[in-house]
Image (cartoon, rainbow, N blue to C red; front, top):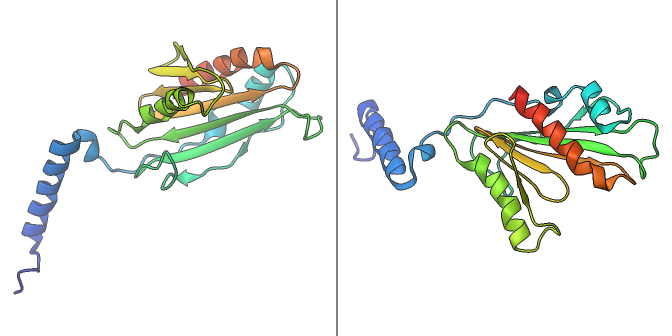
Length: 186
């Protein structure tokens, strides 16, 4: 038998030792790489709720999942991303308002849900977004970044944005109201 051949018992020891080293170096969250359950952003708000909150009729939400998050600034093994878009009915596309929700379900035990919110604080600090982020009292942590609300509850983070032409000053209150409805369902 060659030195490079693992016996099943040796493999199990190697896996256990690797997990122990990862935990020592990076904390217990480094060991948990189990995939997150897929999430459906459109199931977190009813079309009628979006209509009531926005004060205008919206078309049914359209789901467009990115699925597993394997690249980009939020890449994390096992993370799953889902997006839903509700458009105001009857308005020309250029003038139509909308609500858009992006939800990311992170693997259990990972701190990446916080990283999503931290990216907004960092973008404001670096001048990548026009507004200074404002902390909010929704769920475990939340903020308003000028064009939407970002929230973390446990291992799930999401961003909700509302755009209503001519009603910009009302958008933040609508985003916060929708965010609270979403949190109640997580």
